[in-house]
Image (cartoon, rainbow, N blue to C red; front, side, top):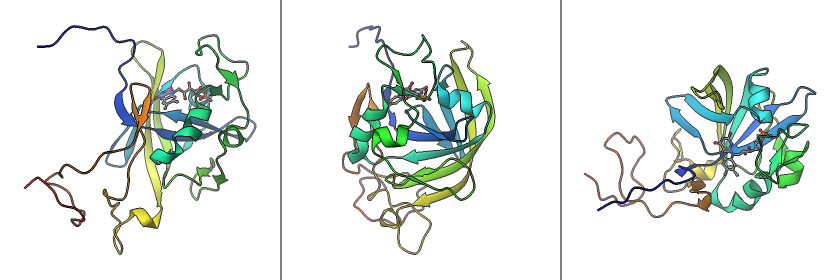
Length: 206
Ligand SMILES: Cc1cc2nc3c(=O)[nH]c(=O)nc-3n(C[C@H](O)[C@H](O)[C@H](O)COP(=O)(O)O)c2cc1C
């Protein structure tokens, strides 16, 4: 038995990413996003078109998709009320304020990227250097849909299966944004028949 409801948001639990982009003056912006998913080496991002990140990506295509671990949620939340856009657009949420130094405000450290201009977030165990190949408005004109081609992946070696290019799913946990609350992952339940990662934990699947 279900009931019909009208929730104000539909954030059903997706990983948080911290997006680094380049401002017009050569400084860098950093913003949390949860509208991000990967197919092959393309990552699709959904960005409010009024924000500084969207503004930057329509002009300078370089970006870094930084993946924070669950323990970094307070740093993510420190970024939540901030925008790199000045003046702050009237469409931004109440309480949103301009901050030109997002790294400093979050207490996160920039480290240089290899193939793109925006820096990586040193504290994030996974970092994807990428370039926006397509940036287009959504049907309602409120968001930008960005297709980013990943050029280089950096991983904390503690997350990899030694001697391979695989991320160990038992070692990595994304930070999940679940109806505006932060979660990590629970224990492994099973795996896909397509996994190429050597088994590190018991699985309930055949
Ligand atoms: C955990 C989290 C997830 C968010 N997900 C998105 C998102 O997917 N897309 C988006 O446009 N804004 C998202 N936001 C809001 C932006 O981070 C916020 O609008 C911010 O001001 C954007 O910064 P900017 O204007 O400097 O780009 C999210 C915020 C948080 C805290």
